Length: 117
Image (cartoon, rainbow, N blue to C red; front, side, top):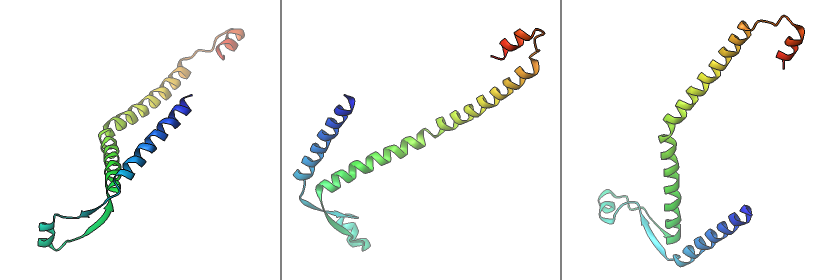
């Protein structure tokens, strides 16, 4: 059921994106710098693209910037979790050594067999 809902949702998103692309097919000029500044510096790079490519490119750039931002923001949490994980593993090894060194074998053979379980 969830699989079908996901497919329906993806289909609706696809139809929405296709509609936006068809409605914004007009070419626009994308410039590196504003015209006055470009004339001053000599960098007059410009390209003509359909508007929907500019819109979708902006969306993709925003999502990628957000992912990178969150990855950097969560670096401290990941580092702390890694340190704590190593500490837990070290303490578990230490506990296993202490259990082995302090365990006194039972005098009765039946009790010894039960303890091994």
